[in-house]
Image: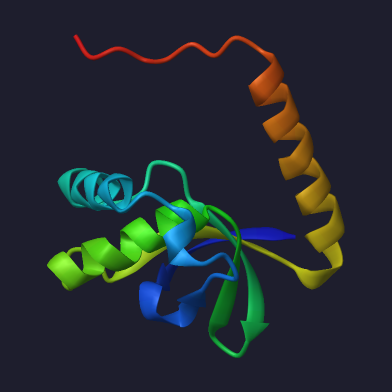
Length: 114
């Protein structure tokens, strides 16, 4: 079962290193997280211990959430996330992989600001 939670950023880790991402983009996303009071696309996590989580999808968003918390601990302490059960991990990863393939092969409509 997939469950949606608010998870404390300090209880999340990523196995993708932060230098894999552009620092300016992390900074910009952190500011936007603070501006709208959260992530518009929740992290996808797997429980890695009691109250501990590992990012399956959303590594850059995770690092931006960490930065947002550094900027404003009260406003960015928690992040919305889907937590995937261990028995669904393989299917979840397959779905994410397929969605990425579909996304990259189709024309994407980018929302505009009026």
